[in-house]
Length: 153
Image (cartoon, rainbow, N blue to C red; front, side, top):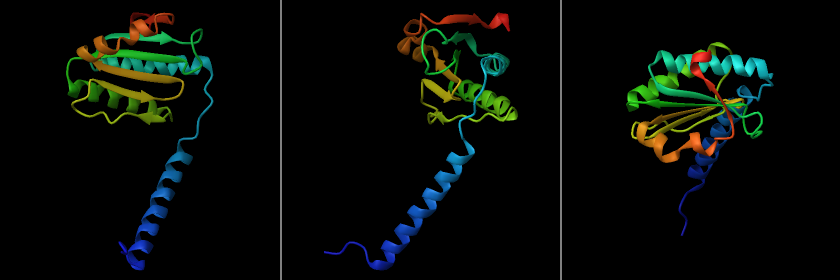
């Protein structure tokens, strides 16, 4: 039994080629940039200020230098609602994009989500609802990291 005729197979092949071209273009645009520690710290503080401006709470910057090579910094923040999570995520995206920095990966930022995540390589931004922050408890998981209080910036 033949499921697709030759014309349909050609169409599927063309669609796959187009999708691959789009993906390759996106990947080329997001080549990993080498950012020194001071620049990474400056951009991290800018991201934290963006979250603070959107009234997110309990904002903590974790300096991961002595703990892992995964990233230089994490920002943990708590939002009171899904719209506030999205606003915080968008504010960080906008401010870092102005600096020529785009995320390598983000989660879907679904309105029902309890955790928004944006990975910029040198920085991973974690925005939680109160329930999500309590449940995942990254503050405890990464307790060995040096904490930078937002009031310091």
